[in-house]
Length: 162
Image (cartoon, rainbow, N blue to C red; front, top):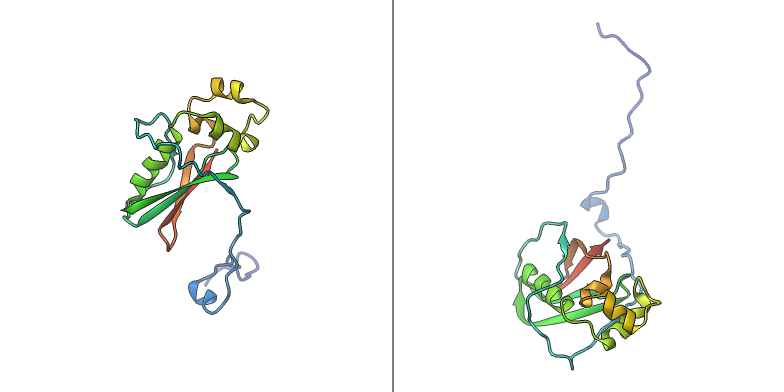
């Protein structure tokens, strides 16, 4: 004989959506505001040892399908850089390319392009060059690689947090 310890009600399961539920339905994607892209092809791409490095908080799978990488070059992510590769590369190699770019010496031209989206936007060039050692320094604390995504075109987008 079982003892009833109280009223029995069906326990509601949390809302779970399966792939079968999504088939045939239009999925709305989150749209990010447009960003400004840094184009500085006239500057030589110096491949020195990195001074800037992301703190990697995610596991990196080294798939060799990356044709380009897009990453933030300003503190709040409104200014981005895209590097295109001649041949597909791995996720790790693409991230190193971004770190190498961000390790470049900070120039007045670069700072003027990202100044309005920086943490210390009131700093003029003379103050900024004393504060930041390299381009990546302008990111302040936005240097934590929390994730990434490789789209169907081979564009690797880094998800950076602070």
